[in-house]
Amino acid sequence: MGTAAQRVVITGSSGKLGRAVVAHFAEHGYAVTAVDRVRPASLPEGARFLQADLSDYGQAVQVLTHVDEHYGALPVGSGRGVDALVHLAAIPAPGLLPDAATFANNTAITYNLFSAARLAGIRRVVFASSETLLGLSFADTPPPYLPVDEEYAVRPQTSYSLGKAVDEELARHFARWCPDAGFLGLRFSNVMDPEDYARFPGFDADPSERSWNAWGYIDARDGALACRLAVESGIVGAENFVIAAADTVMSRGSAELAAEVFPEVPVRGEVAGTQTLLSIEKARRLLGFEPQHSWRG
Image (cartoon, helix red, strand yellow):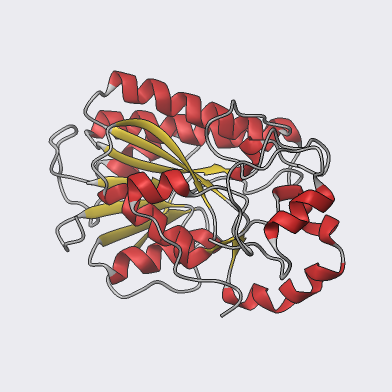
């Protein structure tokens, strides 16, 4: 992929991660349709914006099949329309709306888009899952081991993370129904823009302040890179990946922090320096993902 002929729809395009993903795909030659309820402040050259309420199934279908002046007259299921879907649209965190509203909105949108993608013959679906499925907050319930990875059963603790667990289960079954398709869930850590890094040195004063996710984060630009690598991968079936920076938000060594804050949690393997405690080894191995950005400069 990566040529101008490849059409990608990116939902949630006005969010922090969505803006970076739209810019990244446009820079790499994709024909981008950015979808959200609210228009982003700016769009890269060549990207097009489509306002839609994806909780409406009919709108989700049209976004991926036929919208005047966006795709032209493309027969449903022809395989000549949208090549890939990157689904980031959601209420982005717990506590922003009542729990039932968060769960209902997010799971309905994911179902609508997965179903519409199946109808449209789209076989590359990448979606935003969440580090919260690892069992956050670790400050309340320590993880089974460190670095945490994709190997243990998900542990949703909020309506938001429960919805992400449903998203991953939906992906598993849609992949079963579409055996030639890839449904790849990216469990993004706490997304950061470069301007957020000014406050990182302050975290050193109290290691417990950011222990809730084992001091993890992901630069939005690296989150965008992960999305593109997932789209361009040849993976078929349903797979989930932790996506985090290669380091932590702290200046102190990760092994030292783990011993102090999580003394009862076993540490697997060698943890060197400020290495992330959110394992990205699976993403490295299967996607070729290697973070390019750090708050350290």
